[in-house]
Structure formats: C-alpha cells, structure tokens
Image (cartoon, rainbow, N blue to C red; front, side):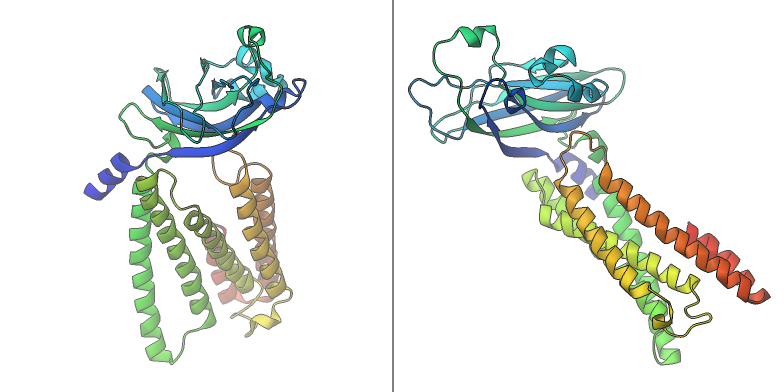
Length: 357
C-alpha cells in the first residue's frame, strides 16, 4: 500500500522538444504546431511552459512571441478542417496564453503558468503553439518572414499536485499488482514444471513454450515498471525500456497464440512434431516481425488522436492479424472435430473455450 501511494505522489510528466516555425506567410501550417495532450481530473489543473530560441536573430528580425492554444477534447476533432491560423477562433481554443517570451543565446525564457478548470467531468486538453501574427504584430516594424527553431519544455499538474495524466494515474499501482500476480503464477508453474521433469525426465515442448511465453510477459511487465520508476525521477521515463516492454508483450501474445494454433492443427494430439503442422513456422515468423514493426510505428505516432497505445491504422492492422490467427485456430478445431473420437471431442470443446477467451 505504501509503495502504491509513493508511486502516485512522486511521478511527474515533463515533455520537451524542438519545433520549426516560419517560411512563406501563405503556408499557415508552418506557423502552427501541435505539442501534446494531457488529461485533467475534476478540479483546477495547472500547466507550465517555457521556450528557448534556437538561432540568433538578425538585427532587423522581430523576436517571435508564440501563443499557446489549448483545445478541449470535444472540440478537437474539428481542428483538421479549419485553417491553422483560424483554429483558435473557429474550433475554438477554450484558452490561449499569448505572447510567450522565448529566451535567447542559449538561455530559457521564464516559466509561464496557467490554470484549467474541470467542474462536470474529466477532460483531455490539447496543446499547440501558434506563431500566426495578430493585428498588433503586423503593425510592428521589422521582418517576420523568416524560419526559426524553438525549444520548449512543458509540465502539467493535477489539482492534487500529481503530474500524471488522467489515463495514467493508476497505471503504476496496476503494473505492480500485475507483476506480483504474474510472479506468483510463474513460480507455481516453474515448480510444477520441475516436478514434471523429475518424473518424466524432460519437459514437453508445449510446457517449454508456455514457460517461454510467460517469461516474455514477465520481462515485459518488469521493463514497464522500470520505465515508470524512471518516470517518477525525470518525468520522461526510459523510452527504450518502454519500447522493449511493448515488443516483448506482443511477442508473448504471438507465442501463446501460435501454440494454441499448433494444438488446434493437431500437434500433440494427432501429430508428434511441429514440422508436420503446415506453414506454422514461417507464418509465426512473419507475424512476429510484423508485430515488432507495428509497435515501432505506434511509438512514432503523434499523440493528437491517441487515447491509447496502437490506435489508428496500427491498431486496425493488429486487429486484422489477430482475427486471422483466430480464424486459423477455429478452422483447425473444426477439422479435428471431424476426425476425432468422443474423448477428443470432449477435450476440443473445453480447449476451444479456453483458447478463445
């Protein structure tokens, strides 16, 4: 319990990056950049942002003063159909924080602080930086028709000073619980496997495969927990650990699904070798590589419409692959039913329920 409380209170979210603005004024998209999103619980939330100019300005160039535009989740889907420099007015932005002062010569500008209020329900807020000139900026002397880069750092806080986004508030506790339960299950399974090996002299390949899949899942949860521990210290976590955790989790699922398909195709029931199961090994290899590639693509997606991991096209491809594997599993069960006796029929009924869950 104390460990769980420590997670919730100590973790924070900090995001930083570099954006490029400028160019021909006819290209509005070059003047408007999405930053990130953050889910606030009911209450008064806070955000803090500071900027740093990446390049030194020429004598006749005006110091850029971008505006932070903040959009509500229920309004955000409209932004793609509205010109960039009119989004704050027409979407609309529920709040703007104008004339942010970037630091120069390698120094950061001051932290700018703002508040957001949730009274009815929790909301996800979307943050963007805009350098679209207003009427006052157009009347200023000096050149504004140039490209420049700007570094930003932004932090978010909930009403209770927690810096976890709404969807992440209970993830540390959930991850610890899952890892504890998985560790207990793994210890029980390893003990049973050792007992089986002592009695039979070796472990069946099915048992070894299950041990391998369970090991991948345990390693995935452990890496994710390490990522969360790092997150509480630096607000960013360990992206490499998080990426490997996602890959191992996917491979664990592919391994378990492949084992179910192999048994449904008759392995250990009518066939004694995996090589007798047609196309299993090459299909599993292709599916594994595809899952790793999709995880990588999912991590590179922007967050403007990401409510969860593997959303959008990546998610639809994963769903299609999983449905194809399930169809293969069901077809194997049906073929076994047509060729097996009553004892096999009884086993297949229970196996199909467990494998489909």
